[in-house]
Length: 228
Ligand SMILES: CSCCC(=O)C(=O)COP(=O)(O)O
Ligand SMILES: [Mg+2]
Image 1 (cartoon, rainbow, N blue to C red):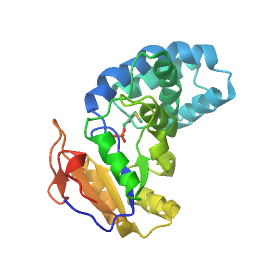
Image 2 (cartoon, rainbow, N blue to C red; image 1 turned 180 degrees about the vertical axis):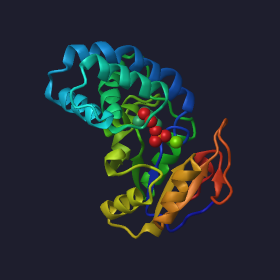
Image 3 (cartoon, protein in one colour; image 1 turned 120 degrees about the horizontal axis):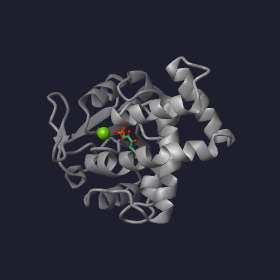
Image 4 (cartoon, rainbow, N blue to C red; image 1 turned 135 degrees about the vertical axis):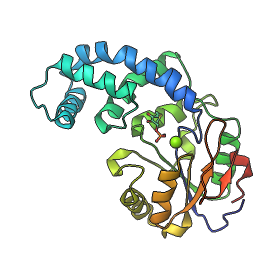
């Protein structure tokens, strides 16, 4: 599989670099367990208070109590909602877990060698995930393979737009200051790849165990099948 014109690679995390089950069986349960006490203890810290207010706005309930906000956040975690303030708060809670060594960021074994090779070959590497930029930096900074953050030139989360929305990819390409066809987007989710393709980007679907191949995007099962 060859994309010789790609000058930058933007990668998704969950289902692409990282096992979905690490996100759903380690990260989400950790956030579910720790978030309530974290919020009760830190609700007046400005960075936390800002996100609590953003949750109230998303709920359309500006006067919601902290306990109502907590109940809403837990329900969003249970149903895997990609709501920006939830993602910001999850990142804050996971920081403690990574720093204490409760877990490391899972990466498939083919990911790190490929990232290192692409970087050495002069490709610029970026991440685009629904997880917050803080959460992305934590996952790669405290990964199974050590700190990989020096490999990346930048990170994008839902502040740039939602992953199934072509506008988000247009904004990413504008920030990279490259023509869209020079940027390759890697993801396991067809709707995300469709949106990136609509924005003019190259696309490649990762079909990891447990995910399904789409119809219109080229597919690989591992990063070492991608020749750039
Ligand atoms: C950044 S690690 C946490 C992953 C996460 O919270 C998430 O929602 C995964 O979304 P993705 O866009 O990487 O599929
Ligand atoms: Mg994914």
